[in-house]
Length: 378
Image (cartoon, rainbow, N blue to C red):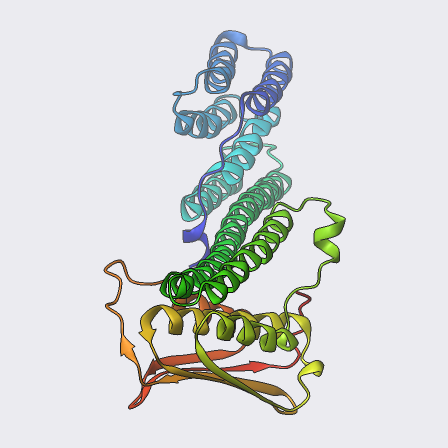
């Protein structure tokens, strides 16, 4: 049932004071219209005091306001047989009840019971001259008014809660995106530099010139990676960095450079592209580039002496990226696991694609199927 999802609405002190002030005005009107003050003044004074106690004391029971606001007008009408001004107390209490009580069945029950009670007493003659049709309508109107305010307040709170949830989810997605970017950039750059340094260490005695060239390539890779990291950090911080904004994101056309970079570092890798890679839009192309980058990084980390192939096949509406390695020896896996596969899957999913990765009879294969156009600007 819909009402079961609703929760109580709490009024602040200024709002409670306004309600108590209205009760005071009604009390004054009730008192000055009565000739016999012996009963009227104590009952009305006590009811007004109940309203102000509820308004000023945080722990004051609101149910006492509800009961007294219905019982006192009923008592005054039975005693005087004509005290319709006091009925404004009941109208005020029904509106307050409907505007704050989270048990909506209780609100409906109390409102209907009050309307029926006054209706029965009026037609039985106990309330002579009582304009019951108008007051029954007034009670129904106050119920509807309170219900409308309750739902408005509840809707506002639900919207605020939803906005907070959406903000948390957006922050979580942003953290994941930052983690992917940092992982891809740092992991790739360190892997390439490590390959160059390892090669230089092995050649430093046999071929100093080649070792020197490897160190130069490692330095160049460091500089390029540092530039990429600075650019990414600037974009993540939303800084007004014209240089960073002007630098285009990597695309499928940069895969050849990426493969060459790994090849120069000592990885046995080949590359083949089929189709019009230029027609792939930027966001999807960036995802494909990062997937190839991570797959090559993993191949260089976890296998030694393997032959790695990178294949790119572009069709009409989608394109496939396949990175496979065969042969070589497999390194001992990290005890802490890896973030690479999860990163690649998230990359593919972020642009509406899919990715599968796993061992084959020859080695390991990563296959990604991505859309050409995602409608998202990288």
